[in-house]
Every structure is written in structure tokens, then in C-alpha cells.
Length: 114
Image 1 (cartoon, helix red, strand yellow):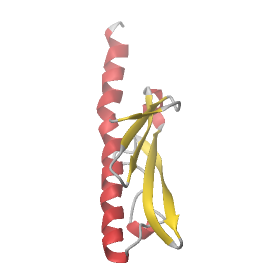
Image 2 (cartoon, rainbow, N blue to C red):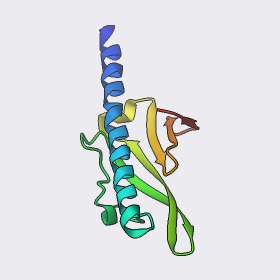
Image 3 (cartoon, rainbow, N blue to C red):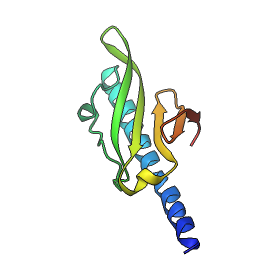
Image 4 (cartoon, rainbow, N blue to C red):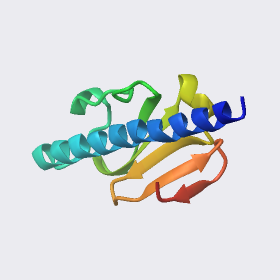
């Protein structure tokens, strides 16, 4: 009984890579879209980005964009833990067009790095 909570914590930590992989894939697709269109995508569908991570432990991927006129000049991608991953202390990840990687513990303050 003592080892079970540690085991669950270890499983949740290993699943974090699922959310991180989803953001890295989305960023790759955003950059490919930018190379073709000289603007970043403003919707997930435009870049063929899934709102859910490959293993489905994270969902709700959203794009926040910075604009200059009608051109999206930057983005921040954010994804949240869901399902059994909700119990993890790291509840959200985000990645910006500048390459800044951040995470938040229980939805409070964003901290740099993953």
C-alpha cells in the first residue's frame, strides 16, 4: 500500500511526455504553415493540428496569437492534463513561437522549462 501512490506518481510523470510531444508536433506544423503562407495559422484545422495529445492524456490544445494587421506574427500553444492525468501536479504546458517552454503546477504560476 505504501508503494502504490509512488507508482501512480511515476506513471503520471512518464505521461507528461505525451503533452510535450503534442506541443512540439503542433509547433512543427505551425512553422510549416508559416513557411507556406507567411503567417501563422489561427486555427488548429488550418495546420492539421489535433486538440488532443497522441495518448489522450492531454487535451484542449489552443492557439493564442499575436497579430500585426491581418498577419499572425507569433503564437503560444497551450495544452492541459485530462482524465487520469488530472491528478498530476503539472496541469498545463505551453510553447511559444520563440521556443519558450513553460509549465504550471495546478494552474497557478507559469514556470520556465519542462
